[in-house]
Length: 217
Image (cartoon, rainbow, N blue to C red; front, side):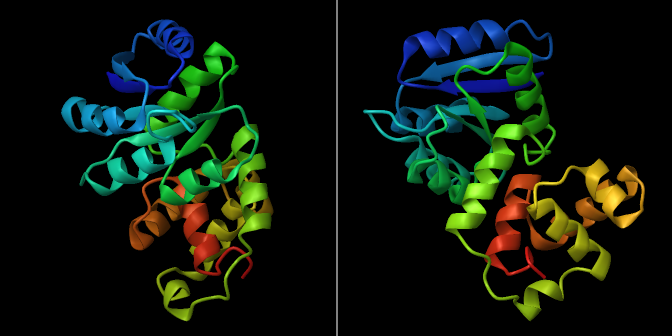
């Protein structure tokens, strides 16, 4: 069962998400709150697998909460940022703080359920339309650093190629077609690369690529 915590200052949004997620037999909403500090407390007590986190909340923003939650646990939950998609600095700050994906507040029910399931499995949402747009804007605002030899030394040439294409927003199937290999092979190489660089999902692997100059190698 996937345990989910809902964090949004609008009770109607939380109620709607709760109804949607409770329709899935493998998802359980274990708690909800309307501000960041309470989210930090509940995350520690309830130990959810996924947190649906609002960005702007009067009682404490989602950026600070995301950072505190991810820094305070050895096995942190995946955090799905729920946004109206105005691409403000809160969204990019949450990405840099460790968020694993993004969803619109008016997302379709099936898409929300799928997003929660993907994050729970550690996939992130790099190959979803919303997150692709976010990552494209992230790349524009945060130009890739110069390549760091010590970072590249962690990866094989094939792994570096796959991480670079992932940073361009490609799915496993698209990477496979670009490199003339099977999608399952891409998945295997990517899994090994993530283990080497210490990232837990695809989104944070993309952030690592930009920070270490691998995105444009």
